[in-house]
Image (tube, rainbow over all chains, first blue to last red):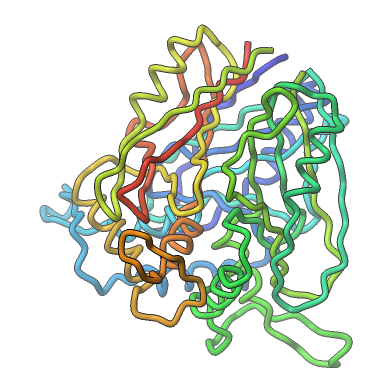
Length: 143
Length: 143
Length: 143
């Protein structure tokens, strides 16, 4: 059994942003030489999400819109953080709660060297407190 | 290490429907001959969910009811699709968003040839945009 | 390939409670002798959650607060259970629905005998219908 772990990074550009990482995952699996097993994908942050949905722009807007309705900015949150750039406290509890709703990881089987997934399943890393430099991991486990 | 991948299909019957697939998963694990490892279960769609909860009818009703309250039909969504049967556009952003809330995959350890799960844990494939022909995957990984 | 399965128990103390199990998981992985693989963590109940977030008390309060707003007590739920201690029916559909939102499992890669996770990622077992005696499982799979 082999375990190949790739640490990947991305500079996000917006406060909230869906970043399609599907092709990157598929290429890593193909190039790994592992024919049979499972690929695990996870973010290493608590203010990002990782979700799977159909890869179309109007649905991406619906997802962002939903996250702001489900976890509204206009509420008294306990958690706040100091923002050096602002010289003041800012609330990012919303980022944590939106990430909690989405989850931060996914997996797919590998068969004949390719991931088994639906034709519309698109893997998104979701920035929820950007822009920031972000880290995520793709682990390919198998033979 | 062995990886057995089963592609399963089901014809759903309702727009929203919880389908208990627990026994099917347990039987596949038992019949696999794999004694030690992990079973991964995932839907291949973006308008279904896969969730685990107690298998009782009144709770199934609460889950459906909750999904419609959390993601209400009465909202302006960006994503719409053409419905040939209706000859018009129809919104199914709600199906995608409800699926996002539920997630679409789960896993359980395998020990002595059986899955390790709680006595009340019931695995549901959740139709959110039916009726449709649906595909899901059970991967049994182990020795 | 080895699979080590640990069954763990905890007596929770409150109705809703976030219990940090991160150190326990890290120690089990270190002591396992498994250098390369994946660790799977799951609750065996349908009225608990298992989630990952930053481990700070004010955020824990925000998570609890959010769960009660997302799934309010004040609603007509179908599911109820008999409470022997009260001699009457009590609704705990809210516990099931809050757990559904959180999910009940997570995983992390193992590399060089340690779990690969973000510095702020804290693993919480979340009691949603306590106090109760609870069971969860840590499976360490690898070589």
